[in-house]
Length: 305
Image 1 (cartoon, rainbow, N blue to C red):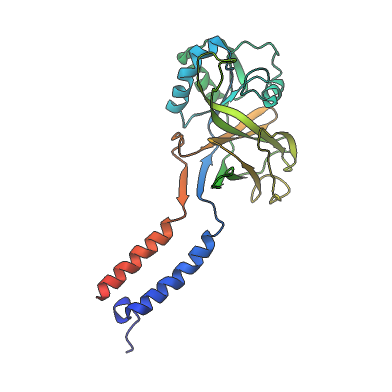
Image 2 (cartoon, rainbow, N blue to C red; image 1 turned 120 degrees about the vertical axis):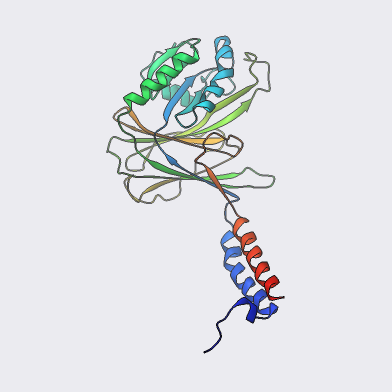
């Protein structure tokens, strides 16, 4: 019987050649690949939109514990902070757009809160009131649409990082559906103008884009970086179709919302490693498999000696 091929029957140079051949496709696969990849699957979270401002004195008593509230309920609620498009340095026209969709009064009291677009709580609310509204929103959500979100980042030395999002769904969406994506950032106050004493503002919506059920862009607020939309896979959003987006710059996370007939049907957030909220996130580091391969081949060579 012919002896089988095994590591102990092979000279070291042959093992090294095999190792090089094994590593070559891995190296080629990593060329041009993202530096960090993240994935999350979900959709059941409740959307908390907060209308707030850097100049709002009442907001200064609420905002410090809102972040803790969201962190404590990170598997249940996703926050998007909407700043008015006025002298607030973090304001954006996307805030005016979101408020108009709710048919809310332009003279809203600050702060104002919506859970899944409903409720409209105003003023210096208590944590217990938000707890009750969150629970009520969960009861009202009769069903939800599962989605998967991938976020790849390419780090550019001396230039803005490049981000690519991939979003796909577990079921076909109705013809009335809208998919909205927010970029959220942690913003640092650098001026005493319009400053209520809060220097760091979390979950600020700085960019937004919306698609209809056919994948056509219906609204876009580019922020400082803009969106790039590669060719989409699938004419209608649903099984085996996806939305792909590219943008650049700093980003702490992205929030994806599915709305049908004016109701929120799915919410998923994906965060950077600096915001340890979503335990479903995981990063795929480029060096893991090459290091594992090196350990395996080193073990085989040591056994041969």
